[in-house]
Amino acid sequence: MKFLNAIFFEYNDLNLFILLIYDYKANTNKIFLKEIKFFNEREMLNKYIKQKKLTFGKLNENEKKIIKNLNELFEDYFSGKKIDLINKINENRIEILIDNIYKTEFSRKVIKYLINNIKYGKLATYSEIGTQIGSKAYRAIGNTLRNNPLPLIIPCHRIIRKDGSLGGFMGEVNDKTWQANLKLMFLRIEGVLI
DNA sequence: TTTAGGGTTATGA
DNA sequence: TCATAACCCTAAA
Image (cartoon, rainbow, N blue to C red; front, side):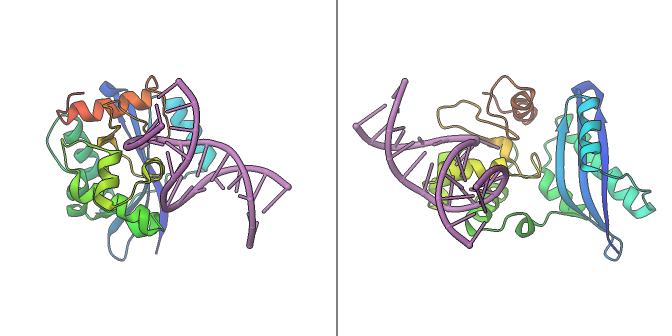
């Protein structure tokens, strides 16, 4: 039994909508996160839902529980509790399948390095990642992070440029976009000053 | 400031 | 299928 499903959370004080696309597998009672999208306007969220033809099916009781926990995790994170989302998620019957998302050696190396080494409150640069994984393909690293379907969970927001500038986020390179501000906001929540 | 390098993916023929 | 451009970048000129 397998459902493709979606749910969204709304955080009014942050002016933030989070849309989650996931599989719920009833036989294991687990949620597999596929995609997280951030929006600053309800209208944009609606547009995306329409465009992707997402359905909001009825949740069963177990599924509801997992989703509720996840929402609480996000709330805790946003309120400044120092929680490592990716670890907490695994404790809450939620999984991300990195090897399903990333198909090449290179991109898996990048992502695994992020997950294992760039913990809450830490910062790293694209070039540091390159050094650590033994590659000078800095742009390729950027490209891998750009395609990150789970920003915030897979902590690409903690990667900045070597010159100290913020770098892009969620496909946006322009510092003035709300996406870039979101990156900054996440870092500030984690207590990182730039 | 510009240029070339790097690995992957998206796009188009 | 193949090629070409684009990319959340860096180092060196």
